[in-house]
Length: 183
Image (cartoon, rainbow, N blue to C red; front, side, top):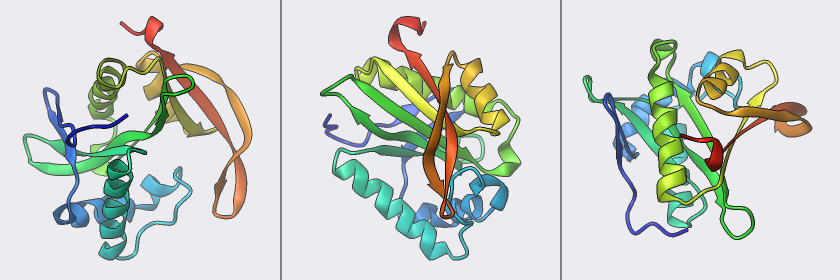
């Protein structure tokens, strides 16, 4: 799947756009919070340089047609409050993509991610031509599981030893939404 330019998505409250080095302080603020990173398998950031490298890495994956990661901009404040995107996709065999998302703690439990996830779903099915959208959570990540279910995802099951977090293999829950079930 090749995009001519980095796609921009606009919702009622958000602008999803490509991140730049100027976003590094906001990304650092989010990824330096241990409550945000605990379900990512990554240690909290300790330097803004880590955020710069993450943005560079994510933009590089887009340039290689391997993934797409948007910065979530809260329009009323014009600030980056999280990131979201497709960690990858497979269109040759199965037409599926994997979404992921994160949000700064001050913005939790405000319904923001529901609006963002709905825009990711629409983009995946309508613009990317996906048939299946997947998401993976830690087995105890209740808020993320509730978010996915609220947006029509069904739990497919637990994948044993699926991810390695801090040197230990952990189980993950797999969720999916099929285009035929999406309205």
